[in-house]
Amino acid sequence: MIGEVTNVQKGMIEVRSESGEFFRCLLRGKLLQKERTEKNVVAVGDRVLFERLHKDQGIITEVLPRDKCLVRKGAGKKGRHLHQVIAANVDQVLIVVAIKDPPYHKNLIERYITAARGSDLDVTIVFNKADLGLSEETKADIQKYRDLGYRVFLTSTVSNLGIEEVKSALQGRSSVLAGSSGVGKSSLVNAICNSNVRTGEVSDSTHKGKHTTTSSQVHLLPDEGRIIDVPGMREFAISGTEGLDEAFEDIVELSAKCRFRNCTHTVEPGCAVRQAVANGILDERRLQNYLRMKTEV
Ligand code: GDP
Ligand code: ZN
Image 1 (tube, rainbow, N blue to C red):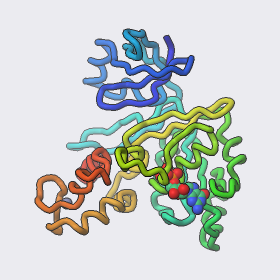
Image 2 (tube, protein in one colour):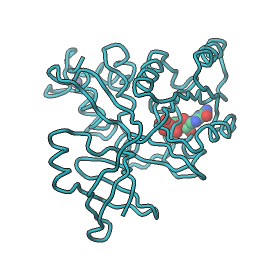
Image 3 (tube, rainbow, N blue to C red):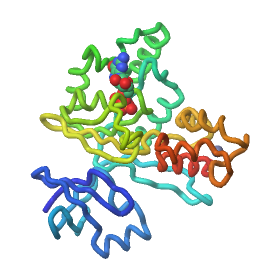
Image 4 (spheres, rainbow, N blue to C red):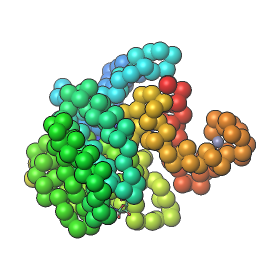
């Protein structure tokens, strides 16, 4: 069967078949070996051939050739060259920011743009929450990005301003979603894809804070086109100290409450960051990403 990878997590690969069924797959021996040595053998967005084994389980026998990918490049651990495929078969990066609540950081937008252009992908920027009132400064920023040649939309998922425009800009394209949490990415995807992504408003105590970072998803547009929402997109563009703290301001904020001022959030007693992970407020993977990136810079 042929399918598309919709999630990769700890060796478990979720594949959606052409008929829309989901399978939990493993890599066949040869591919698994390749993954161990070369990495990046399979990524979200890849088209694969797989065999159904049992019920919803399968084994991937082949990864089909890729079109453009969003790749994170840079200096890895111990000076090794880092080359990580974030999403496969994409043609643009959809950067979502909010005009306020939370405020956008131009620095972070620049980094996403740099990453997109570095992978030869188009850039579309959405300034969401327009209903909260547009400042002169934001108007000027929007104009600046338009002058630079990027497609920029002003939207509100509350009033539906700009939603149809964004929809048509995404139609028939394969976009990877970038943006901090809380800016309205899930709301936007819901408005555009008629799929059902949980937004920040839904509070389900058993899954608290889970939906934000643990699951990669590929959302299909009504006609043609898709939006890939990969965990870690918020972090990937940052490859220097600059911007790191902005991208992880929740962790920075928590760390102010650690018992030790120079807490590394690994072994120290009284660590507010690890406490937040234990309480389910902070995602473990997000903390690991943060710590990894800090050691990389
Ligand atoms: P995500 O973390 O980027 O996926 O953001 P969510 O879609 O979960 O939205 C975060 C919060 O912002 C929720 O409380 C939404 O209701 C709210 N929100 C989303 N879009 C808008 C908007 O256009 N205007 C306003 N005022 N609030 C919005
Ligand atoms: Zn700590």
